[in-house]
Length: 99
Image 1 (cartoon, rainbow, N blue to C red):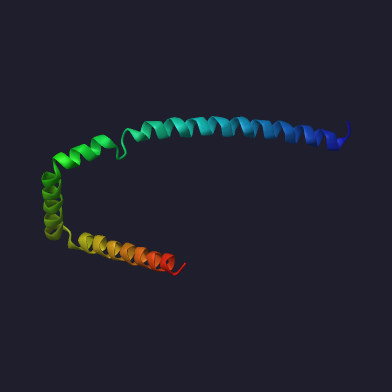
Image 2 (image 1 turned 90 degrees about the vertical axis):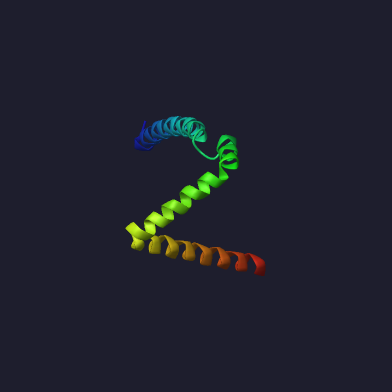
């Protein structure tokens, strides 16, 4: 065996190790996604919001009112971020409308 054959064998071994590692990582990702589904917006969260819509809105309003008093800079930051997102979304809608 010459050096090229040895290098090829080493690369093949390394490739197989990487393939095994990728398979393990893919399996881990799929299990974590399944676990995460429990905590993301699912039907249970939607039903809760439908039943307690007024309470949720009232709590959000109280939070904003408290934020106005306690930390107006944070509220200013939230509103600025919302403005930037709205501006970006409008620009994307405009670009999509042109196509």
